[in-house]
Each structure stands twice: as structure tokens, then as C-alpha cells.
Image (cartoon, rainbow, N blue to C red):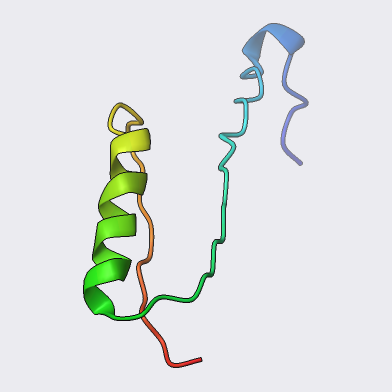
Length: 60
């Protein structure tokens, strides 16, 4: 049987990192219009470290 750790030997719990997920879907006339909107969104979050997103163009 393992000894019970003393409170001073326990590591404090690490705070969980949080993420924000935003999903936007809208109609566009062509791929070029979608890229223009993507670039506008890129300009809104240039300083957010660790950002990542998925960009898709699909048939509606």
C-alpha cells in the first residue's frame, strides 16, 4: 500500500485552458467573395495567440 501524500506534497490543480468556438455560415456568390470575407475576419483577430480555424467553401 502506498503512503498517503502530505498536503504540502500535493501539486495545486492546474487551471484548465478555455477555448472559444465561433461558427459562421453565409451564402456567397463565388469563392472570391468568400476569401474577401475570410480576410476581413482575419483582420479582427491578428493578435490572438494560438488561434486556429477551419475555412470551408461548400455547396448549399
